[in-house]
Length: 605
Ligand SMILES: Nc1ncnc2c1ncn2[C@@H]1O[C@H](COP(=O)(O)OP(=O)(O)OP(=O)(O)O)[C@@H](O)[C@H]1O
Ligand SMILES: [Zn+2]
Image (cartoon, rainbow, N blue to C red; front, top):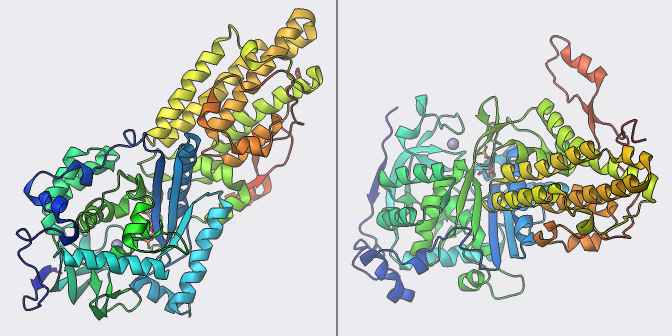
């Protein structure tokens, strides 16, 4: 079907401002803003500095997408949120004041349809589904600071105020629109981006032809400013290959987009026309700002902005890159607000090569995963296994293999063995300061280098490589244990036994550093390690990245009784056999958690 994409302006409307370039850009702040079209974009306004240059600023504001409540969360929604939480925890370790924003996007056609299909009114439906996101975040140890709902009246007030500003700036006009619409994307599509039979490439469903009389945002006016932002701030969109994508879109020519819907009742009414509602994306993006408002305080745009805007980082999936890297910056410029510093578009968790998503229904159930394997395993696996930015596929076999090898063996077993030897030979007490124990020990330098590698990679959002660096510390600790064989040295007695006691201090200090460096990804596991090393919960809660420095463990510190910090997952042999029966189409999980103490080697026992 040939799609016609056609915008025809209603020129008779009195508010229409067609001479876009000749009028002041924005009346309230015209001195700064009127310069935007005549000179090159001002850095102060368009500043999109890198995460590094933001380091001096002691506030770090990051956001996940506001998830659409057409269905409960799945592993894809959890993936972005886990990554965001890991970044937030890392930034807190650096001593930043972090505002970590997440929430739910609750307006639009798809929500109304989904509520009706479930026999609920939209408000009830939103309450229920929004709550399921909060519950999952709790289960996954997500420590967000703000949870925003776009049906909250304070959000609505801010959307209206923002709309009025953009309108006052002459960037909103009314026109007819005709095109192909994907209800699942809630977006009109260009025919050239669609698959055969006008199918949406993300949702694999045909788009429908629609014609509407809508309000439009004059995106085309921001063509040059956006091109400048992208070329002058190459880290505005990350990873770099996504920047290329965005630059290609922008270069191909920006077209105004409709920001209201005449046919959708479940939305925020257009301020000047209650027969239309504001387009769900125009509304939802503003959740990043309305989230900053404080209850019981004056709630307007300027007040919200003063509490933390611009965001340091929008973490999103690549499916919604265009909204965040093209529409959103243009909307912000129109309203005279600063741009976020970085938009990072990560890849998809896929199933059979297709994006896992609510609309396709091919999702992986995160509640089930977390109940079975615990939050640390789930968080660790997805961060470690999927290179941040690229797509990644899930398989249970791989999941079990990775978390067992890394968390149970490399980390858990090393701690367990060392504490076992310390109990047997030193009454669970450290005989010497860790700084003294490490004199002349090259492992200390290795650990310091790996800690630095982890830090740089966390900072650059290379989360998988940061995990890898922490694991390398664990591997180095294991090699040290094997080379030194302290259990043999204890048997020899005298100076050898003394050296062995020092070796255990060295390894436990390594474990402590691992706990700090891994705490953004596996906070619960890190706390368990810290506790077994004889620290209190309060002490753990006040750690900073500085605590990755060698030397915190002191002589006389008494260790706790060893118990597995990560319980090995075993394949259930019976279920495994069942699994292999032909015609057994209902695949069940084969894994069970085996609660057993990690074995020491015979020689150590
Ligand atoms: N398969 C996935 N892999 C990685 N992230 C995902 C995945 N699915 C969703 N997300 C995250 O959720 C965001 C989209 O949120 P949304 O609530 O629209 O979920 P969705 O499942 O993609 O919905 P739908 O299938 O209806 O398009 C993405 O930008 C990304 O942050
Ligand atoms: Zn779609």
